[in-house]
Length: 550
Ligand code: TNX
Image (cartoon, rainbow, N blue to C red; front, side, top):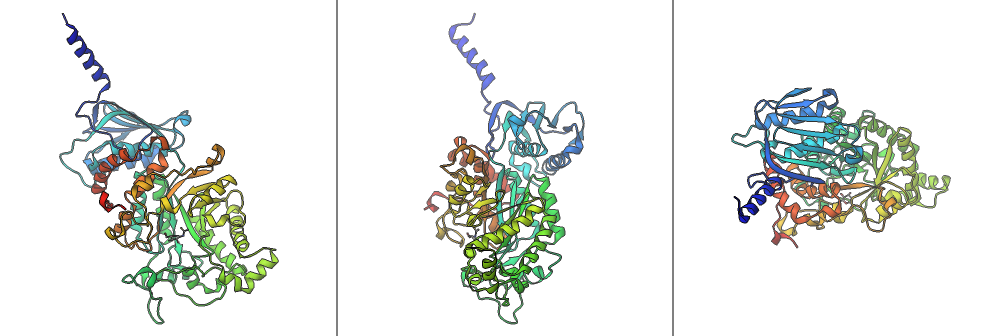
């Protein structure tokens, strides 16, 4: 006979068995935080004989290889890929009819003691399910060599997940400093781990042209190289002296670019190339001075310049032929819907003095040089549109009118973003105050020299890409957000990683989850586990202590 106390204890135990996790069950720690996690008790163990089940291999080749290779390198197991598996398996399948629940990039991940099952409506969703699966395993799963003595278990769980935004971006400036191709692959792998899907490749600026263009070889013969003044402050660098050799820099060949694009596709990443115009053009004009207003000979700048007066001449027809030829090759190389044409910080002082530019203003019945920039942008836009693509540019391109399908990247605060959304232009939010990860992340005296500004981790995390004051309809124009790494003060991959992580980690959550689910304390707890993953991967992230904050 059971007495009352025993009965209560028994009920409590049954309830606990049904709902409580065992003390020993692994703690789930995923970034970006999934929409819904329901953990139960128990684990699935990765062990010898485990299979990867996929009904239609050809539809998921990249995803299967990604999963298999990681398991192989980190655990030493060799999962066989089969159409139908009995026994322990990880199964991947694309199912129609889940679009409403999962969208294009969402997934559901179900782990029982016998099976891991990832469902999605597209290969992208399967890929993100696999990324989440890795984060359910010990951090050593990110290792490229087998770690002995690890208990390769995955907690029993049901996860349903999808992103808030379609544009989850990261921009790397490879002009101010050149970064080797090997790093570009890493950048994309790191992005994919954070479920970021848009790599904005800032290929052109005053300090270097970084993409091979077959029709204009001098762009890289001349434009990719500057003198090395790395021992001097960015803003106090002496220009190239006569007779001095410019041998600092580099560029990516078209073959390398094609390989980046193919790697990106395997990681559900779109690369958006940026070809700056009409300003930030010292490097191409050093190679082809005939496309500037003055025709003066220039050298690629080893450091800062302000204001940006080296513009392409908007009066000469040859300028447009040149840019259209360049864009033709760029469009052939990059399959992205958007081509970024820059548009920022154009100081018009040369245009004011240039006869050809003034004639253009008159002939086209333009009001002033601002409208001349609009003419420039719209002309390029028509060219890009005729090739089935759309332009995106910095928010200055809004000034003076813009075609309807042009997208805007709002960087000087959020006003440009609000104006774009209200006038029906798609917009990517990347305001300096929340998204410029070239700024200091702690008190300057505790940090390596940076451009200035102050953007600690918590501020990045607090960002909401949908600015206040937009209606529900207008808010739909916000494609998403992006963190930008400008590299005036960043010369190598290790430093780039230091500036990027964990601030990009925070941005990944800004782009993925809805504001009501955001919680900085909880994020900080999960970050501890994320840091262990970075350690395994060799990413040197920044650790900022409370006393280093302002
Ligand atoms: C502004 S953002 C720039 C870049 C600089 C950056 C430094 C933008 C469109 N232009 O040229 O590198 O600030 O933070």
